[in-house]
Image 1: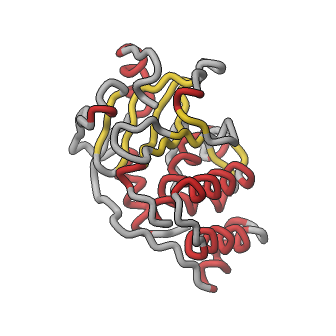
Image 2: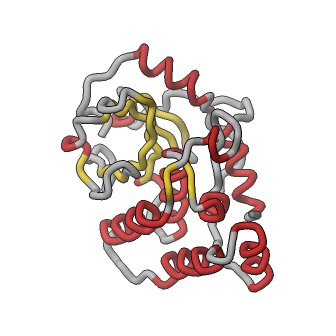
Image 3: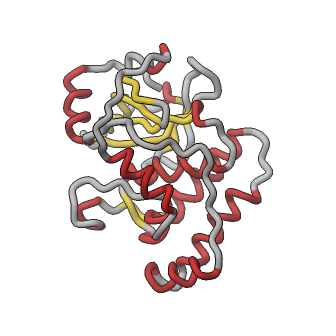
Length: 225
């Protein structure tokens, strides 16, 4: 996605400040989402009577999927979240300007913003066996709405044109078809890339400061509601 659009350093700087993003902290090498009766009971108490079914359906999606091609997994995961979860801003949902929810928090609330959609898809696909190096959470500018936005991008191989999984658009399209998005930077557990550097495989930088990504990984490791 990142080499198909005109890029500006000013937008990069603005969104970096907006996101407060750094790559740091523990990397989850194995993701396990299994929900016992105690968890499902707590989910019903905290998240509503329909929550246990959501978590069970999500667990089934991860562990019962037999689709060998990655593309089928992408379609299933994209549809799962886009069709079930409502977009709600962080300020309305959490009372703060920027909150990165874990997939468990996301499903509990049955709501979240673009970051939460992208993060949930990332970790779900990783749990389903899609290689992390193929997945990037990508900050973009949504030109139609003139807002900062986040999507998940998938690279079938290094240097390939990525596919875009977006909560604003249900279909999965190649990046060259998403002329409404201006890519800025992308990241996963390995590091952070600017739009110019992702296609070359060069890291844009990292930091030992503890920020949203580390906090998210810590919450993920606890696997709590």
